[in-house]
Image (cartoon, rainbow, N blue to C red):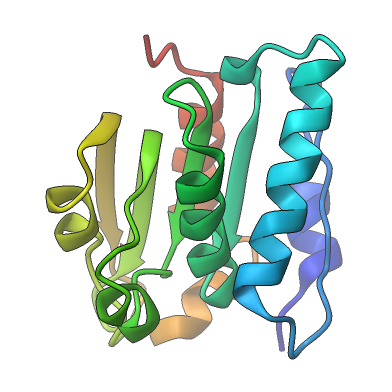
Length: 161
């Protein structure tokens, strides 16, 4: 069971504003990424610095995060991909990410490293990737486990310039 409310609660922090969408189950990834791109542009148009915007997504949400990076094409915006570099990303070879990218994957999961995506992306400013080993496969991200939450929060608070 994916515990979105608890994940949202644990990711909340006084150092940043968290805006979290729980998208409908069968959301079209490309359409949702376009919506998120519009949201980011609205924030930027209203004075939010691009470097203060971070998108995070797990699984299909990770693919949506990568698509948003591609559509937004800002080298100052930040993107966190959790177990999201799947066949969809591999099969859409025109897809490139831009900006600062942090990836976390579970070693027991079939969805692994995002390195192939970074290798084909020309405008990645920074890239960091870690693996976790909980033995929970894709389910490692269903709950706010410290193995991935702590690195995410640390990266969110880090200086990526």
